[in-house]
Image 1: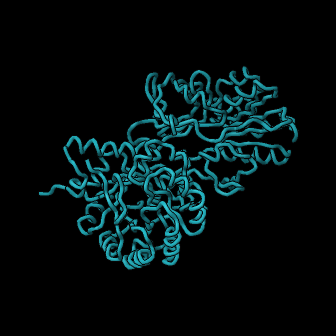
Image 2: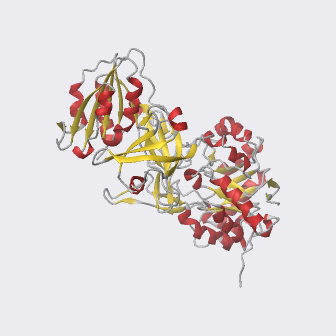
Image 3: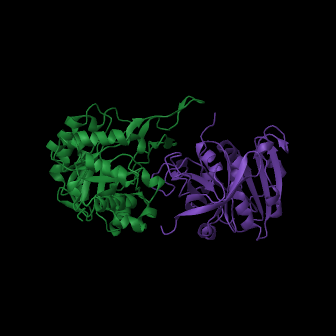
Length: 302
Length: 260
């Protein structure tokens, strides 16, 4: 059975990774035997300088999902490379490093920093975090998307993946802009902007007022976006949005995703990514599918 | 992570008073590793409701693992429906424990509000083996929040109670009980757990009398493993996660926002 996949020149033994921000910089997960089986690991987004994150409360439960506004709390690129990367590399699974710059220049500087370290397979550009108080996200503007992807592609020695936002009228033009600018792949999708209100105090539940919704609640919309985009682009898609089980992941693969990322489910079931991988293999065995490529984008239409 | 996550059987799930229920779980691996102040993170149902796991302080870890909880929402509501023989997916033990008091301490004051009393039975189980004077100051809203305090007395704790409506003990907040103790900066140590306004009042009291103190905090948690950074709170040392850096912190490092 062949379940290996590629993003640009980067090769992965299987199509299952974790979504950035859900694997944290938490070493408690690293020791899971299951983690070593995954196709790739995607640590939490790294910025040029350290960020302390948003004021609490930062998360809340929603129907079949969660609302969060963590605010990219991270130690900054230099500290990440010094203190976090060595332990992540030791796991022995390819790393998709998620980076976020406030400007094109910062994205470029981040890409250059990671050029000079070893153990990175792919750079994922977080163009779509909804929790940083920005009026317009890079991934809400095809031109800005094209500019940032182009700037990073010019300097990065790694394949580059653009992580896009679902908070757009039509994701396809933005996906195409990223592809045209040289992106090697797309990550679909980041969280849906949302909020919760405490009716007793008439205050927003989150300290940041608004946040991003993830989990099974967003899955049908995210599957639709992957389906729509996969028909229009040639580059591979890493799909995420409410994947709890292999059945959920297979929907994305059939819709056209090459890889799948388990996100919020990590918080509910730390073994979810390994369960998803095992389930995909079981599905392929049961349906006598020898190569994962036979199911990618295999949606049957009349 | 080894056996940090596993499936365990419910032994019993019984009300101790109108508001509080005690759940006992057959979880020997957790019992063996647990220390007072740590917590477990329970996936209450296999499906999507409630979606998050729920964190609970360890109430006792002897033969079985015990938690004490109050039904306040969908999660604890679903937990209350569990019966003997049902299974639960449990992560734990997690978090930083209370730790032993510093050298020279003779008097231990545990200040608890409502279900915040949960971690203190386990703490007194441990501290009773040493030569401390143990005092529990406990405040509940009504007599429905006053539960079987005998277990604390059996551990040698002097127990003082207050209720908001005066139905049991002194009428008023737990801070009304502060005059019951005669604190000394060198020999008195405070552990506290309860609603934030209560912990803020304990912090004021500890500052005034120059007492060392530790407080156990509560926050909504998703992973409880330090990955999501969702349960961070403000401290004098910057943001800290309740699940990993806490739940127990030096009380003087906690920053309590103004409560309106």
